[in-house]
Image 1: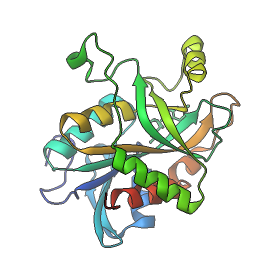
Image 2: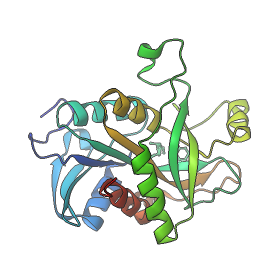
Image 3: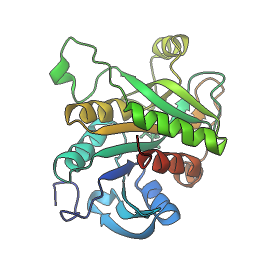
Image 4: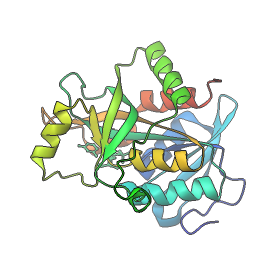
Length: 236
Ligand SMILES: O=P(O)(O)O[C@H]1O[C@H](CO)[C@@H](O)[C@H]1O
Ligand SMILES: O=c1cc[nH]c(=O)[nH]1
């Protein structure tokens, strides 16, 4: 047990999928895993471990925002030896061609600051995903015929943006989407030599104002989960 995860040693798989929403973790475990058991209920941040295609997988909620992701990813890596961590999240599209329900694979994630900023100080560290996971996720998405975009995203500290000028510059510089966790996940994976990727479904469109209701954010993102699972277990 750790401060924030109640699982016993060995209860967590080496491969962990991390949705922000703990109820998406429950839905994904019930929908895609067999023999899933609940491994965490501390603070209601649900986690489950089960099997997918003969492979052991944990699906653990990360909460919203990089400080929360940082807590769960640190404990999963350092206390439970997680090797592959894949965020399965929702995001807001920032380009015209990135439509609601499309999938975004984040090669890199901009931020205005992460919990790791105390290390980098004046340096703008460039967090990157694992290339093998990215390749495998892209191939899995292509095979399924899922509309998928690969590029940079923005890991924001706020959901309700007040800086229209910043949003405009992100759009102008080709940032595909905004979400709130990937940059810190990538930095932690680099620090501890683990594999990480963020696979996200577009739930909102920053330009058109389109937005999915909360029940669909919790349960309608099956393509993204299967892409993440296939990528995790593709031999590179
Ligand atoms: O749907 P999740 O995975 O929580 O991701 C996105 O949704 C939340 C905001 O509504 C933030 O956590 C953001 O990153
Ligand atoms: O962080 C997020 C997630 C989904 N949609 C947004 O606009 N922002």
